[in-house]
Image (cartoon, rainbow, N blue to C red; front, side):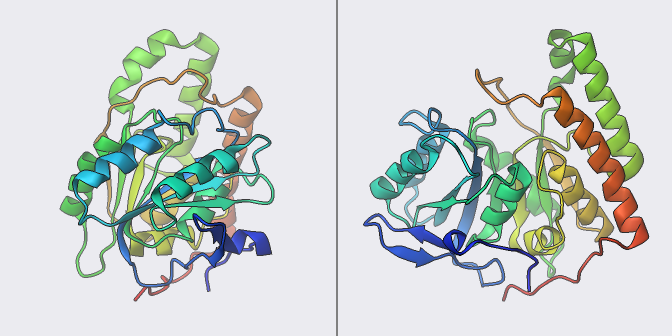
Length: 289
């Protein structure tokens, strides 16, 4: 069984007519081509008619044979994120858009994990609610995924990357924040993940099998969860691609506060130590078919 604790209310989503329906499991066989997992915390204002989520759903109408779902995970928001997200369910139907409302705030990693473990897709894309990376870039990451996919295991991960924009962003960032960023990159390289320049971009594509193997082992639920995911993948020798994607600074996007940088640094050390000491263990993959 996948290691996950759910509140009873988190086991269900509401249909367009308000009926309770149970979420599937990542252990089930896939039933759509793509699941888009969108964590959202206090995103009432973003999830409106002009959001990137709306653009994605509308763009897929051009290819009606393509099956997909969008799962919006309300990570214990204090605003009307769930109510606004439910407007998409009523507009497009629960087969296309589902809302998973968490009883309490878990953190971005916890929200992504809950959404992924509730998904139906052959491929699973995690994407931020602010639309800083456009959904059209999925073609880039999917092409890279297919190039490294290890058949018949069907294990691969493709990560969007902003590393090509680093020089520009450093020029616009304060000296202190640049120091924090470089320190974080060093800790990532030293303790956990090598060969990936941008571990934190919120645009990652997984095969279903790779998602089962990595998310079933995930422990970190806040900012550093991406690093643990990639650490797990490298331990299992799952192929990982890194692809440059278009990225736009979105006004009002949540920046990582100073104390979160410290927490992330602490988490990186703990990730390494807990796996080395056996406090955390890597589990065998769970079959999805």
